[in-house]
Length: 529
Image (cartoon, rainbow, N blue to C red):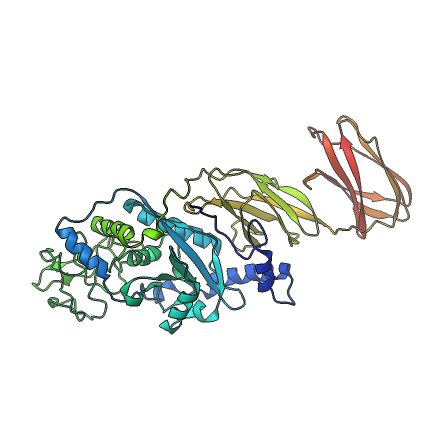
């Protein structure tokens, strides 16, 4: 069974299709312009246009109890349920939905954080999720921002893949943080709102719990309005038996789990320092109680909900084994990764000579990593991203880096299941741009450099004729384009000669000497022994 790294399907690099990119560009837009616009819009959307999660419903999954779960719970109380100890690895297909113009996709960094949090929430259950295949980028205004369920069946039918949990990330998901699409009472897809994908939020884990058969802890109260100052009725508006505070009827009432205490709170609520609801409720006998906010399947605020109960975990693992066997990996998809390896080039606080505004980046391989997220910014806090890209190799050439300001860059390793590694330590560099092919400096006549080859202890001599007074930038570059030496000189009319002392400790090899003026440049290869 094969598994694949995931990343931007829109990029030219690694295993991605150039043909796909070409189709996604407007005829009048260059690839450089497209990426610049995409990066800018993604940043603006994520910072300015995202919905406020506090204004959204926590969940829009239908109030339907999974028929398999009802049978399972009957078996469970008769001790007919298998205890499942082995870890289960569940395949997901990630679909990122944007506008018709290809804007608004959930940024890769946010997606990696969300997968990390999802697997942390499921770690105790020994259920871990991995991404199978490449991320699917979909352009569709209607599904990107949908407040009606009418679009869902046709859309899911068109894009769902078999044998995986299909997860769609959109801008607006029925005015909720997420929901399960459940035709005939069985989940077929999970849809999540981008704005609810914070790195420490349990919204995705909540919806995955639904996908794996779990109801809300307050099951039966979804359509009820309860006066919490009075005892609850014996049944809800959905004709569900109300669970007693002492749990005497826990096998038949509420969510049907006996290790999830009674909960009647069907709206978002805050917990106290002990993780309990601040709202006191009364069961049908008048017994007062508070709800447990630590349970992910409740509607407790994100700071509260972190876990599944033991019975919930057992149900999910049995559901996977009995109903979703085709979703499971037959072997461990990948191994945990080490910390990010150091960055190689550009080195920190260096100057790079760039031909056609292109810069070469290289870093060391992180063991067990299959992909890397490269981010480049003009800000040390990476508040605005000039370039973001997923790469399967450990080097790449990035175009369109034209800013005269300092750039900062970093790399985040990940694989199909382990996405919790942070970025590497950032490094900075500056660019000196040289257009290729470089116009010759007409003001200079023949340029002679000697000795060539030269020894490390020798000074390089440069002779030239100039037709006028000419400011020059003198650069010595290594084979990566890194500036080893930089100084300013002035050539005067007539014969000129300058002596260049090499930096100490310079390794033997080939170098380039560049004399750069306002209207062009002249370069010469130098060999150092």
